[in-house]
Image (tube, rainbow, N blue to C red; front, side, top):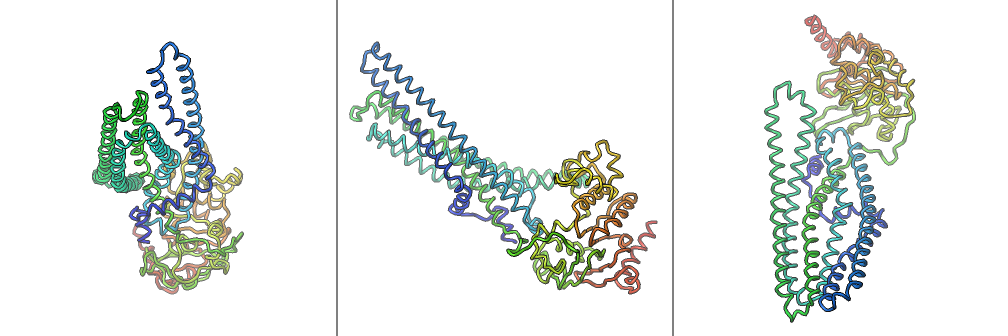
Length: 595
């Protein structure tokens, strides 16, 4: 896990060869489109670099011929030049549309793969992965990859072709003058080589700072209520200023590097122009006046692509860093996966068995130690114990949010590792203490955008769990808007909506993890009524702090330090006068004091 976390933070460097190999996997299925684009780019570059030859011919013709006799000649060349440029722009449009569509499709597939990969990760992995960093990878970095396929690579190929094609024509026009200018070409590539190495390191630092900034923002905007309650705004502002300053300094270093590089290339360009005029007019060079003009135009066509390559190198390094971080994420293997021979189960009876189950979130720090029990179908079971005793962990293991270290967990006598995760979780309805509601409406939060459910089914589920009591009082009823995280509803109302959501999806096993905690007395009565109804749905597993809510359960399991100490119903456990009796007496005394 430590190695995987380092990869996710961007500390793991992936060689360029490996990155290219990974990218080829996405490009290869569209190789015909890229081949056609390559042909169009070649035609586009060829048409673009021959246009100065028109200027050369006209200039040479005017220097020799009578002006009155050249009107038709010039008109013909002008028309030809216009047609050539028009055709070139049409080819440019076709090429751009082809590449944009293909590039966007590749990035769409990559974004889907990254998001699906994240969905398949275990809760244990999410605990170690900053959400802000994941958001940056799915949103920002895939956008950088989009620029790579639709703009950067195309422009780089075009500019490289232009540089090569222009220099070949310059050699044809004047081998001697081209030889003089070859020294400038070498200097340009030496500078560009060193610039590439420097900017690559700077971009890696910049991306790391941006990821840290996004992680901080995501975490602190979500927890702004706590920040304000404890009057921590100033301290958080200082922390944000530190991360913002780090990103600012990283950006300044990148801009400073480009501020040095671009003028350096421009200086070489102007020096090359001076050499062209000083040497080009010499008789021994053998250039005509039109040749000198054409050579000057080609110089511009030569150095403009070189300067453009700097910007494209900027985007290329961004895309490289982005792809490195994306593939770092994709290299993190999900801890919980379907076995090759995993099967689908359409329906569970609800028998659950733990056989000598051991589990630890961190190696050696055992949370569960050799847990054994059997729960029969349709039974209601409560787990109680002090914080950290392993109650919630047991429920999380049943739905395979985590993978056990030793032992077996069976449902209907089938090892859950041999059941497909999707099939397993579909049969288990979970109602947690912290209910998460999505932005949208009450209806979409209950159906989870599954349009196969009818309005009648949704209403029936709401009535079943008593959620209709407050929904019918709302102006828009089921279409009432839910703001982010459901903050416009009380804790109890959110819990009733989660009950309706669970009942609607018809699970055969129900899990309630502190579902009745932190709610008002009136709502608790509604929830208790709902729980009594829901017991008839299937096997019910409950973790509850208030012992009064679990007294009617078929069995109560008492946990302490990861060990199952006692089991039985309420009366039999009180008669034992063991751990359960102590917890009951302690809570009874607390209730008396509160009253």
